[in-house]
Length: 135
Image (cartoon, rainbow, N blue to C red; front, side, top):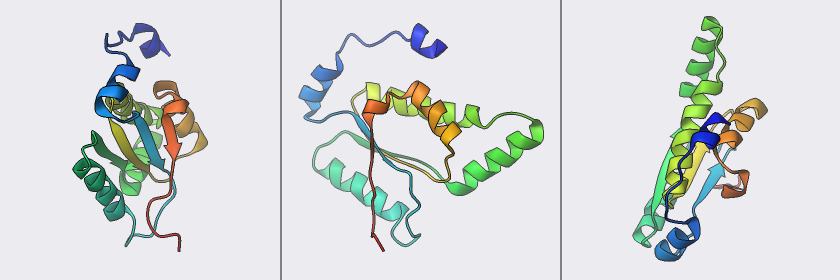
């Protein structure tokens, strides 16, 4: 909340970036866990295909192990996991402000984690998608 208050926005309006880049800045969030064989590789393939199509795109992910390790460390230190999610959300927010399409993955997020992310990233800029096989 404090970041939103102190944030000094760019003089370039989001609509102008969207027009120039021919794309809407959005975080395409895949919050479900795809099978390992079709998971991260297909998400990175999507990033590569969008890039080859001339899009400003970036893959931004948090792996299960990294999040679990952070949770364990924070719990042992008596600190909330929120700071990890907040830092990740800040990066996403900056990239969206710059007009990029983000392919975002984050396994094992809790509702609390999502609420922390939504304080930094406008929920209207997040599209939930499934990337990979449906099986």
